[in-house]
Image 1: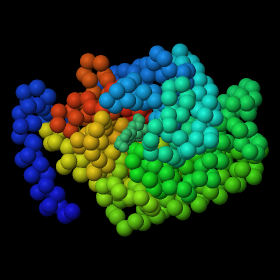
Image 2: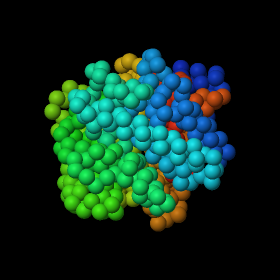
Image 3: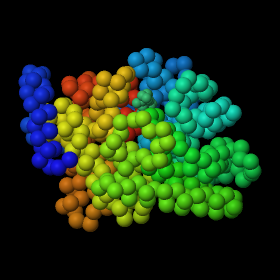
Image 4: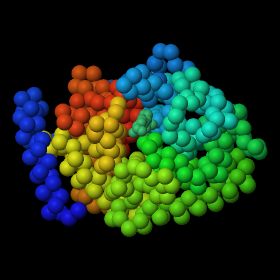
Length: 445
Ligand code: NOJ
Ligand code: NOJ
């Protein structure tokens, strides 16, 4: 779409929704005139509250220890399940918190949740064996059993993400007294066939990454940049861990497969678009994702690529992906016209999932946090301090957006916020929304 047409569309959309919405918001006393950056106090307060809400979800009554509910919501939508992906990303943010906090009580809590999570995943892995998707099973009941309802499966980012967070812990534990015993008992053993948690996931990744799987949004079957990035990272970390534990043949094998994955990842950069496309090789394409634009690219960078030459040597193409997404979402969501904050960001421009049904999608907390985190992370790669500050402020302006739309009394963040009113939408208290705030906050410190 050319510039003029874009401007035309933006004006047209504003004409359609802008005036009534603006008066509505003026009436509600919410309108703001200029780009606002959040204050340190606002950011800190939301950080503490997000940690509290996240931990509350892990302590939710009636769940097995170690289960990570996606949300306490049991209907419209029912998210009262343990998703492997949500759990792994949540525990990754907790690991970061563990590493950065001075609060010894919090440290202890995180460690104990991580231990329960290890035991929960060990059971979940066993329960998924022999089922349709094997270790690629995306979703479990809160007691660790497989939910066999029809669903998009396998989702192959799951085992990779789980292995990544487990390996962060494994490497840390290996530096502790008797750590090696713990790792060999619970996490990684040199044996074949694999029976330990991390090695089973790594073998699954190394042997199955070529097979199409469902994307992180559980909708499209194909080969996904996000999934491949997680798989490559898991195998690279796996090679290090295998080497450390004298599993030398495995270390070599994991490295070779990581390189093979990298060759595939290059195809997403060279797909003829001025940005990184999200999915290729979709064998039963019925979807509407024509642009190939998706915030999953930023999520991949934030978790596993930002310090990697694969990313740094193509940084402009990645950043252009975010610039394009920002432009599209600014046009698409009326809420983004009422002020000059950075726009609320959704999953992908063609999305219609409203959090319960398909009336049209809204911006997501975790997608907007992913943009914040991305800009704050790349600000640290800048040599010029002026440019670095500009990028960091851009990141912070996305934080201002979600701070504005979370519940102002309780600090609750759900999955989405309404594209019309900014009010909470979709699953309540989404665990991943809090986890993504925590990692964005840390990146933007
Ligand atoms: C629920 C999934 O979790 C969500 O990502 C998806 O958009 C809808 N189902 C529709 O498939
Ligand atoms: C829907 C999202 O699309 C998916 O990524 C997530 O795993 C589930 N909801 C649970 O939060």
